[in-house]
Image (cartoon, rainbow, N blue to C red):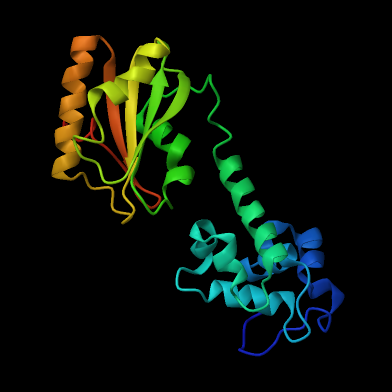
Length: 232
C-alpha cells in the first residue's frame, strides 16, 4: 500500500499491479486506502502533482475524509490542483454514498425499535452543520409512510410548534410519529429544550390521537432515544 511521504507520488511510476485502479480490480475496493479510492475518482493529476498526491491534500484538511461531506464544490475546488470538474466528481460520489445509505428508507420500511429509526436517517443527518428536525410518519403496522422536514435551526418552542409537527401527520392519516433531530456537535445528549419540546408534542399528540412514539437525537454515528431514556 502506498504511503504519503511528503513527496509527489507518481501513479504511473508504480508497478502496474500497485496502481490504485489495478489494486481495486485485483483485490476489491475494501483493500484500498482512502487516498487510493479518492485517486481513482480524481482520475488524473496535474503536471506537478499526481492524482494520489491530490488525494493526500484533501485528506490533510482539518476534518480529513469528513471534509468531503460538508464542503461545497467551491471550497473543494479551491484546493490547488482540484478544479471544478474534479470537485464535482467527488461531490457526486459522496452524494451517491449518502443515497445508498438511505436506500432502506422505503415507504414499507418497518420501525420496530429506536435503532431502526436511527438507521433510516443517521447518514443523512450526522454530518449536518445546523440542527434539522425531521418527522417519521408511521401507519398502524409501524411502517414508514414518509419522512418530513419540519424545521432548520436550534430547537425552541417557536420553531417546533405542535401545529407544524402534526399538520403532515394529520394530512397523511398516520397512526404515530417519531421526531428526529441532529446535534451538530456530535453529542446526542438531550438538552433541557429537547426535553421540554418533546413533552409538549407528546401531550398534544394525546389530545389529537396521534402517538409520539419516540424522539431520536442523532449525533456523529450515535443516537439517543428519549423514549428509552424515559424522558417523556
